[in-house]
Length: 422
Image 1 (tube, helix red, strand yellow):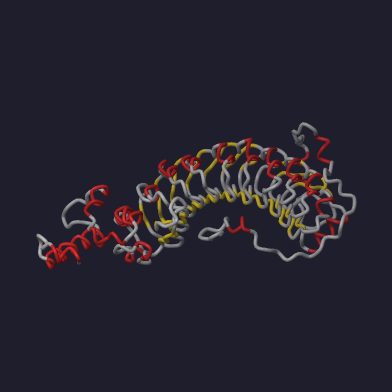
Image 2 (cartoon, helix red, strand yellow):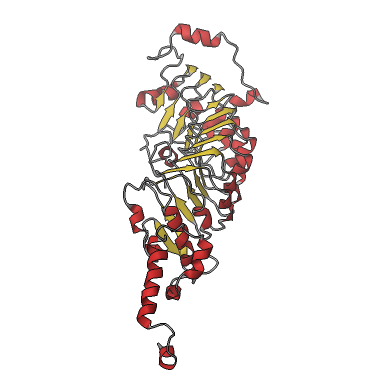
């Protein structure tokens, strides 16, 4: 306004305002020129009128990125993208602004939460990988597909990535391994295949959900290097043994789901070292051998599921003596004996031993079926087979199991499609 008092503008003010409003509409509302291909984003930025200087430049720069992505969406049943209009991105549904760590006075798009929007788009490439300040991206229950861009590695602030319940495919997205700040990874319920790279278990993650994909081959032997609290590998096609290195996760691992794979071999004695474990589920595999006595050291375990395997021998009394057990499922195996403590758990409904080979109990396998199983020599490969009878925590005084109220276990939520886990 001061300049207008000393120097006449070369363009009349009404004309100038009309021109500015035109550019605002073209570039910020519709983000397209009628019957003209959209120019690249680096061409749009210089044309944004000076009237937008009140907006943080970090926000201004992502406007064309969001609008380009909007144009790729082929289905929006809830009309979410109808709010993606105008310069105030912070008011777009699903977008959240914040202050980036490298400039606390700046404003930027810091989080995106598309959970449950059911948006359909052929790819996310050119979208989230172009938002340099993104810290959180959640997209559970959408219809996104394609592969994951290697450019994700450029996102230096990203710490939560949830791509669950979509249609992504291809091998494990190794670009994720190069995100330095990532602590939460959820890619369950997709169509990823191949194997998981050993480097995955060297990432500084707290949560790792890769269940319900098509991963196969053996689990990396360095699985025990992971610092995760929640580990869900269920409903894939993993083969081979459970790595003995799992015992190294004793200080962090709380819940682990390995159910419904093709895992073979014996239960590692080292599982008994997981002193913080509350949930261990390896049901629906091809595991064999006895339950190691070390399982009697899982003092915090509440849910222990080993059903539908080829386990045999006596159910260890030290396991039935665990005071926090709310559910011990050993059904559809070939166990032959239970002691008095285990019988009490059967009576209370905590222990399920249906379809085994235990004489005197109801609902067991037929004698013919049990005989056929034991006619085949059964061995359990371990450097020290005698260690299966050792209880390393040296429990001398067993306590009577108490009735426990089953609490919500986070990892089991990951087994439900459309279920948010955090």
